[in-house]
Amino acid sequence: MSLRHALLGLLVDRSASGYDLLKLFNTSLSNVWSATQSQIYSELNKLADTGLIAVTAEGPRGRKQYSLTDEGRTELHRWMTQTKPQRNWRSEILLRVFFLGVVTPEEARDYLAVLAGLFADDAEALRELDRTIEWGDDDLSVYGKIAMEYGLRFNEMRLRWAEWAVEQVKMPG
Amino acid sequence: MSLRHALLGLLVDRSASGYDLLKLFNTSLSNVWSATQSQIYSELNKLADTGLIAVTAEGPRGRKQYSLTDEGRTELHRWMTQTKPQRNWRSEILLRVFFLGVVTPEEARDYLAVLAGLFADDAEALRELDRTIEWGDDDLSVYGKIAMEYGLRFNEMRLRWAEWAVEQVKMPG
DNA sequence: GTAAACATGTAACAGGTTACATGATTGT
DNA sequence: ACAATCATGTAACCTGTTACATGTTTAC
Image (cartoon, rainbow over all chains, first blue to last red; front, top):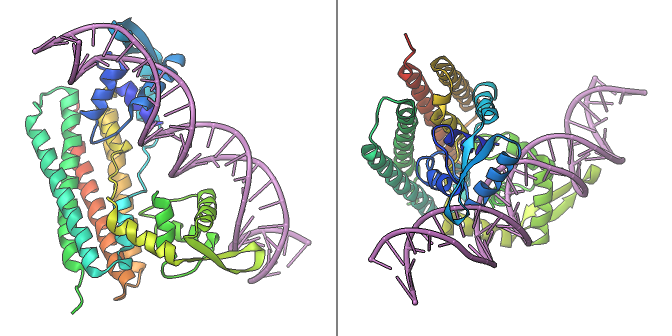
């Protein structure tokens, strides 16, 4: 049910159309949650049906501008404070590590080296994003910086792990 | 499609029934991939239909013992070496961090403190698991240790981040 | 005898992806 | 005029969860 709450959360400090929200998912939220166009439009209709959001303006090309209702704000607060966050217990990357015994040591090493490269790219992209954001003193900046710090530490950790892991694979001979 | 490959991977070094595989998901793979009973049984039937695995023995209570076929082994190798690992771009925990501005600073601090507690528990549980596993020199041990090291570093990083994050939330007054 | 563990299967539903489909408006 | 962008919607399909349903074997 997180998509629904992600939409409510984005509508807290602005009203927006489905199209606007899609862009927010691809920018602000891209490192945190993803959603497809079709998913967003159908979820917005459901949220409007249940009264958590409402169409408060219409624009050209059938554009519908949505705003959060009081019920929506209440629901978002309830979700934030009274429900447990769900952990991710699925990592395809680690699943593959588990099965590296089925490929040759050369292939296993290659895999870990490729991972190191991916993680290095991610780390650099996030550092670049961090540089371009103009952080202020508002809530969004405070919590945005906390989320950013997680990303930076996570990428750093993954990169060091992958570099270490490559060294652990003994080549035959 | 990772569930299918997780099943193939588990069948590489042993033949097993759906029931056995369910237990493996809840033990060896519990930190890497999860699957429900209903998912496992139906996926096994699909895999048998397409010839990637085969029933090689039957036991009491309708037990069906599955083994990997040559086609299955080939498919597993193809997946390991010729397909890109998919990254997780969804973290409910971070999504909530993004929206902490909608709750009070007290509630935000509580949330981050609760996270720190969860991460500390996870870290301790994983260290305990690491202690109880008897690592050898075989492939499964080598790659199992690499996966374990990821988990240990990950939990350590998350815990330190959460502790740091609590300190970042300024209480009013 | 009976409880726990073994063992499999199916149905309903929720969440997510890809592809198709359509059209209006803006900028050059 | 034409391309890019804005803007929404739907259908088919896949993956995953929860719940229901059934029956056997083993250990005490």
